[in-house]
Length: 144
Image (cartoon, rainbow, N blue to C red; front, side, top):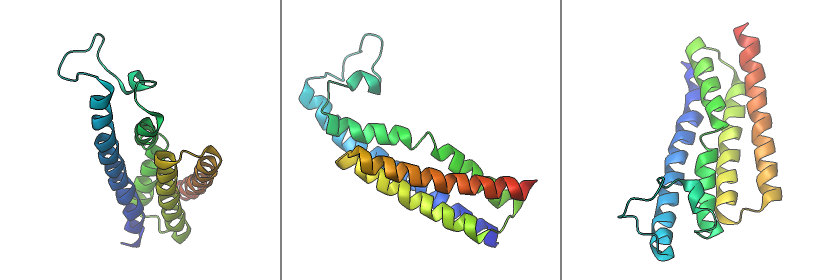
């Protein structure tokens, strides 16, 4: 059962992604209405998030950018957590790195969605990437 501990940070990161989805929608929908976009009419060629760059204020788009980021690198995190849990690998270090990854990604989200101060955002991304790399090394070593 201890190997399942690795799933808690994964479940929380998935839940955090839904928090960011809600935050994005709560800020984007009013901003789209305010910008004059008529969402009730079909848009030529459809409408994608990238089409809203330059239309909506940057601080509104930052939440969408972060939501997208939560579907990129974290997919590796989810895979590693699943591999560790399925194989029953009981690594206290991997669990600690998973919690660190979760905390760093939430901090990254908050920075990106509010101030988008790139030096802090990059540091948080770098540190989370190092935690993820550590998890990957543990997973690879344990599965071979």
